[in-house]
Length: 554
Image 1: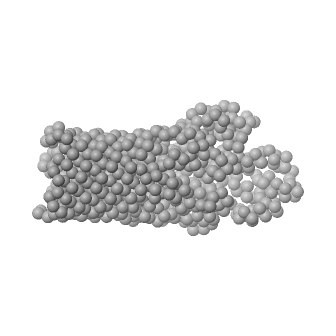
Image 2: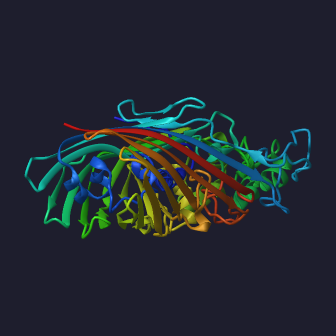
């Protein structure tokens, strides 16, 4: 069994879920095949070797006899995140946020007098969730991520049918930082993985021009997250004002009358602060068997031209995990204060508040999740006898991520309070509207045969983000991106090929203050998922991928 730890206001689980899943945008198809990476993933009409299991199983008919593919892929994630103060910054009249303000306790002012300027919270190392350990492992600063793949295909002599299977990673992404990093409020450690460990496939050559194919993918899906939490919000700012202004004269002089009039709020030993740390969360969810299927067709009317199309099905899952909630002192003291007053107790009963918030809560959590379907089509065309051009167009159904709903095996204290703010929250469930888009993307690849043995490749794939402008955040440090690829292929003999490729993905994003409900939106109704409320946020992501593949026939 796997164990998860979660911090206050359980609704933040939703942020972990949606943002981690959305991180698929960043890692999709970066760790499947080296040659495809160098060709901008424009290979539907020209899939390489056994990797056709993923890109277009119909192309498996081009394999003769027994062929094996082994690949190793290294990826380095360089993710920068920056926070700055806009003009007029405040949360309910307060701007002394220690994340961006140098003022210490000796400065008796609610308005910051000395801002730090742009504050950096860069990713420090790569993190991976290890299934058999049931934990996230940090690879260390400067260490790259490794994604090995392997596959085998067999076409009997004289047969029109090819059989194959492959192990590969359609999605691997993860990062982490040390304690105290400013970005830790939206993910100190994030890991998202999808491994296809078995993919029985079959392809059939209908005639000399047309082939069809299908594969069934048996995959493992998981995500894990550890994060600090805070909730800079107008409502919590108001509670701070009450604690510091209204309650100050009554802190040590309260009586029955003041307790009744002030609902007992002033009896809290620690007041609420919009910039205070509410605790820490660790969560992990997984499904060991997540089936899907790919259907492909390949049409090659001439030696110079071919057309390919693939449909990759959606995969619906029921991810499950455990959680532990560590509630910090301030929210617990708020409820204790209400319970110390008769009028506070009446108000809490009317609103359905819990009578107390424990320091720790734990139990089971689950959610329905759909890995979205994908359609891609492309052509291969020989411009010159030695120059080949591939062009692909694809669509991914990220609109399936309209809403994520987390369900708990018991009532959660924090949700009993948060349900007042949204119809998507109940005592034991929480939904987050995402409203993702389903973008179209394209890729272009060029392959030049310098000699009979040596091939040179280049590719370009601009990636349109599925994340709406008002949902951007630092846990998914990418909006629109560009993928560049270069590669070289060398044929040692008639049966053996070696490919070396390098890929580079870059993305820059600017999230102006008050523009994203999953990052920096202020307002009374944005209490849950805006740790950088009112701040300008910038992200810059650079991913470098290096890979080597070895293909041989037996």
